[in-house]
Amino acid sequence: MSQYTRRNFLKGGAAVAGATLLPAARAQGARVKVGLMLPYTGTYAQLGVAIENGFRLALAEHGGKFGGREIEFYKVDDESDPGKAPENANKLVQRDKVDVLVGTVHSGVEMGIIKVVRESGTLHIIPNAGADAATGGMCAPNIFRTSFSNWQPPYPLGKILMDRGLKSAVFITWKYGAGEESLGGFRDGYSKAGGKIVKELFLPFPNVEFQALLTEIAAIKPDAVVCFFAGGGAAKFIRDYAAAGLKGKIPLFGAGFLTDGILDAVGDAAQGIETTLHYGDGIETKRNKDFRLAYAKTFLLQPDVYAVQGYDAGLLLAAGLAAVKGDINNKAGMIKAMEAARIDSPRGPWTMSKAHNPIQDIYLRRVVGKENKVIGVAHKALADPARGCKMV
Ligand code: PHB
Image: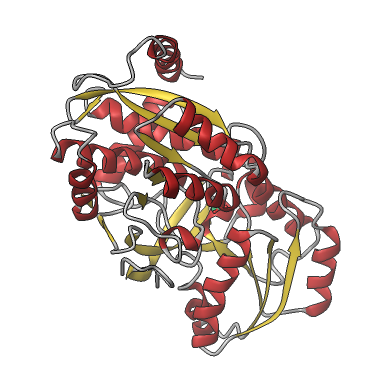
């Protein structure tokens, strides 16, 4: 833990202890309670840490206050375990009575959070989990997302493959919401462009025994392999793909999570992999460079897409609280401001769709050295279709 995080963590801990002594109706000037429900253990642990770091950086850049109010953090490690999700969400909502719940990474866990916040009406900001339903069939006025829908990043990939004459693809992923919906987004774009998915391969989350499936891919000999993997599992998949002799023979593509936050760990096996995502390390704007420098200085780590999404969750809450001058009880005012927010993100500016999901550019990136280099815009201002959302 860097000096910076340690200091804030301790501050947060002290605040938690003191909070239990406060009367139920909190005074106007009291701190705003933010619950962080993120994975701090397991294959997505680093993603959770990057999100929290990003959020704290946004807060630090606002002088430690949003809308004039200090923030008090409450944390739960959700372990990326969907079975514990409602109970974990309720620790923050019922027990700690947070004003805002920020979380999570895993789409299955996210579905549990949604159930809880739809009932309680708690303001909720999703800094990663792509579960399409969050801004689709289960959309709600109090639910906002600063990341993406699972459909979004892989949708533009289909046309890119077809433009290169790659007409058949195998899709491989973990069998859970994010993998299946990522496949759905890719399929929509690929079939529209005339491509054919010849085989869909699944393994249970977070299993990393890829060998048998890689042997199957070698036998099928598709024009391309497309995948959804993230975190520690993604690093293992990239290494195994190369070790199986497939690198250089069948090009590997994916939603950009595949190569985000893991390049230090993977090294050569990742070189040249192309992915589509709403962020790239090498976005050549002052905004992105300033962000990257500040993050690296503060946490002694390189930021990635997860850090950006956490940072933007902070910016969104800042916009909401500023509009109501810190009056967290003015929920309608906050929602209105958050809907209208134009987030000046390191990824590039973005706005909220009617379903509360970012309308954003999707970049084509290539791994060069330790960087996801942006080599083009795969789709300008892409909005999720928000299927089933009644607010649209
Ligand atoms: C998800 O479960 O929604 C998820 C997890 C990790 C990612 C992207 C999506 O990198």
